Image (cartoon, rainbow, N blue to C red; front, side, top):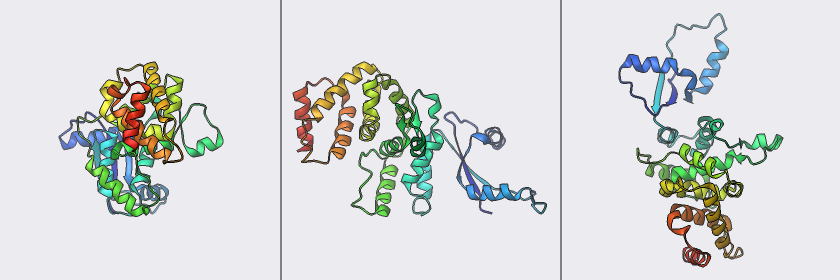
Amino acid sequence: MPPLTIAFVEPNFDKKEEEEIAEYIENNINEGYVLDGIQRLSTLNRAKDDERFDDSQPLYLNVIISPSEDKLLYRMITLNNGQKPMTPRHQIEILTQELFDFSDVNIDVQTEKEREKTIVKGSFDLGDLSKAYLAFLTGSVNNDNNKIIGEKMDQIIVGRIMDKQPTEEDIDFKQVIKQIEILSKNDSTKKWLKVGNNLIGFSVGIKSSFDFITNITPDEFAESIDLFEVAFKSINPSKVNLGKFRRELSKNFIENYAELSSFDEMELVEHFMELTS
């Protein structure tokens, strides 16, 4: 049987001796994520009660211990690059649901299936967060294009992710989620962030302005978002793809937040005019 691949997220992993690493894996096995071999594990689980089952055979593991979810996903993408079973977008969708524990932040997140049964008022859509995470990883707000066939789009996405290999200095997406939680204490900001295109633009833009925005109160941020919306309404909807422009302009506004949030309405309208002309 080929080796199974399991992964752990451990920000401060410092074990170097083989025995210490083995002990860590044994003690934390319930916290691991199966990256490759879930079907083989299911088969073994079904077969284990059969009297002919030989449990003396060794089971080999590949183990990845990553300091963050972002670096783990980068590792997954590079390992699976060129393989067909799972597209990068699907990997990110699964990882968003599996790795991010939204129970430790004060926001509700629902899957599409959960929303079909009961909609929790004020909840974020997991699909929107997954797209925002993809944008965060690629550094691009435009990762969907039905004019390009899926396989080629996947290759482009992989290339973007590999070009944006996370470093120690980068913020991680957990910090973005935490900031979303803080800013969502203001109801109008929460409503704005729940719009998928705004969330995508915010998730990319905040990589450049994180330190500044973390010192902004939710109410101050809400005032700047009101300014953004007033200026955005100056765009003629019959002349542009509003969704695309909302993603791009919200990204630009957030990444240049320190400067643009101090603009008056006409200054921001003129700035948007320059970007959209």
